[in-house]
Image 1 (cartoon, helix red, strand yellow):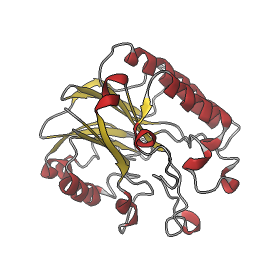
Image 2 (tube, one colour):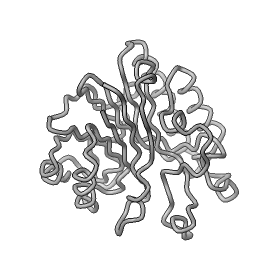
Image 3 (cartoon, helix red, strand yellow):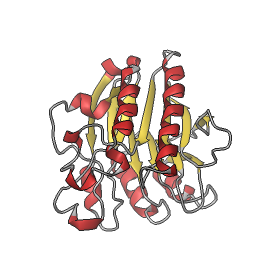
Length: 258
């Protein structure tokens, strides 16, 4: 089974790219983030032409997550991250498919920091930690996939100097991610490439960062204990960042034995 995640950075603008990529790679499950679209605006037709059903939690202009399943309609388990009934931002969606529970998540960016946006990021992370622990306790095969907006370590970024004040690299952000792994989750990409530098998933549009390969690893796929021994491969579909009209993120994928 192949599962992928992609911060598409406006699904309407990139619906043709999405359709082409789905047809070319045919993952079984796809998590999308930063849709920047409501459910009514989502390109269901493009997904259907590629052979996918879609579940969507959308929001006008900002945020938005989706899960696509090949040759089937997704079975939605949860459409919000528990812990704050007042939080209306579209950042979380859980789907059960083919014996696996998959969550598409889009953590807050948190900039500028310090300030209310960074506080919201950390509070969201604490909610995720609590929910992730409850998911692990089920003992089920689970994948938490998406844009975490955290650079876990210095080897996950080309150079820290111009990012030292960014919310993605703050000790609190990194500590929250480390605590998530300490629960028992496995970072699939790092697990399969333990010593690799340059394992990036995001290249900012500014300062010529894509041609310079000045990237960051902020898109992660965490797997629960039952899936760790079944993890065959994990990688970044880097060529998608170089196509015309690309998102500033590349898709990340993993393959598990079934």
